[in-house]
View 1 (spheres, one colour):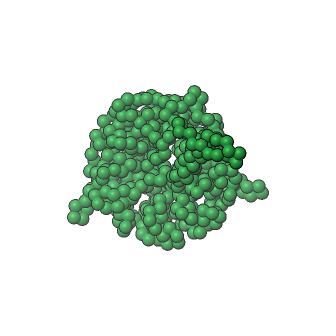
View 2 (tube, rainbow, N blue to C red):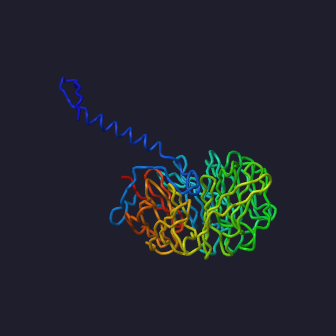
View 3 (spheres, rainbow, N blue to C red):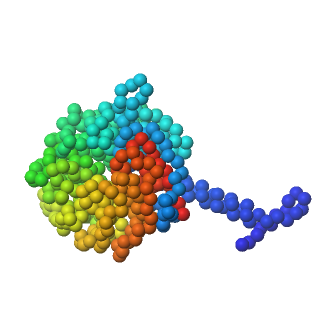
Length: 440
């Protein structure tokens, strides 16, 4: 190592390489921290369940990564967290002192974990584990949420003040396909806020994100006998399919594509629908859409295309549920391979070829129940509903388990998806949030 020397006031020569080195690494660390991308919505910046950060642990130590901190006060619920500008946002059912229980949108300072504001948006949801399912979508100075009763709200991210509000039921004739309530995380696309009320004339709507004014609404024609009318439990994605930007969403009767500009219904596929709950968010790439649901249904790769007047979603392949069905833990596409947990209330680890549907490998579940999934730095992080965490190499050639541990807290079913931000792994567990250090 080169040792740079300088003269002190007394003329003594001292080596400053350590000082310069420390300064360099401090500056590097500060730059790395500043460069950490925000996590502004459900499943990350691109809604694909993938984190772009590197320099993360390639193996977990025995007992798991270091738990840095945990904080309480998030309320009852399965909503994930969004992280933007040094703050994190979520939702929860809480009972403020001297008030009735309600469903709240919450903001916290990420460094101090101090609560910044809490805004009531609707009634609580006490059944089926309780609490909201939506993850806030943060877009600049505004954020958007959907409560379990279909209360769509736009809030000021700094103060929590409600900017505008809509009701899925009252404003759009909305309904859910089955007994569980609204779970969607709304999508911001340019100047539009897009969501799925599930109404007969307004299955999907696009609103001006700043004012809440209706831009268009989309009615969906009969798709088939499978499933039920109304909205599903998925969150939509935007995709370019056969030269047209469109919104892909799984509703009660299957998966649909809607023209992003006009709101025109383009295509639908009923075979993937079940009568209980259609939940996972779809994947799209190279003009193809991969969709999966559980309850003994399966998975399919579709190729939507249009002629002069009509669209058709060609089925490239269909996988029966015994081959692959994702319940509600999500799927990711890494390279040419889809990874996810398979099985109803189960998380058998599966890797399959996106283009052909061929199963590359399958492993027994590492934990119990469904498995929520996140990809980062060459690895898959699975979170089972019993609190078991698993690190698996994203390698289609062979299954490589790189570590497991049990979370510090398990307050119920651990359904919220893992979130990574600035080298830290965040895990929501009902009223609590845990933060683990997963940097190398």
